[in-house]
Image (cartoon, rainbow, N blue to C red; front, side, top):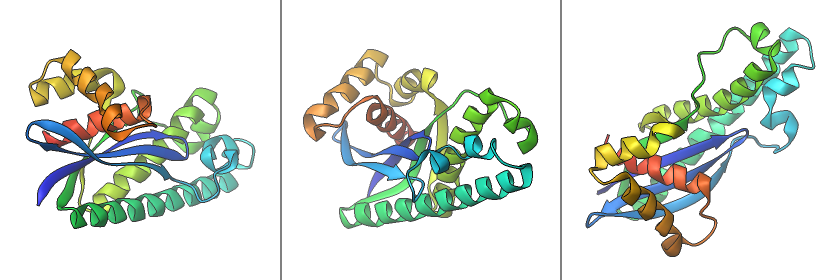
Length: 197
């Protein structure tokens, strides 16, 4: 089987996902998806820490844990189904990449809920953690890299100039069509990097 990698650019409640392989030295997009990480795509569930800020601490903890569990289950099922689909096409996904936030480790829940800045960070981290868990459960070795370092790190690992990395990723739109915005470009680049990590 040929090697493939899965890349994620995570947002609150969803993630852009791109699966890539390299054939004859050129990047090939195998799949482009949008993974929904909550069953009910509403503010309440997409922003669980924001929701938790409005209720008692114990209730907030239960609610956030429930959203996290649901996100992990949805992500794990998605990763597995993506692996099965790509295996039928002759590709094996064993590596992945995720664009990371540059934030620091979060404190305990009570402290998070006291800070609007930390609430924003925690919402994003909950969904990134769901992706990490899903990949681990499905045997996908996941690497994380910040958006600021992504192109530089990819260029270093792939041994291609940074400008050429950007050009090739941008030009993938011709092959795959829209949508091919920033999220898909980041997900494709982090997956490309994962193939060489």
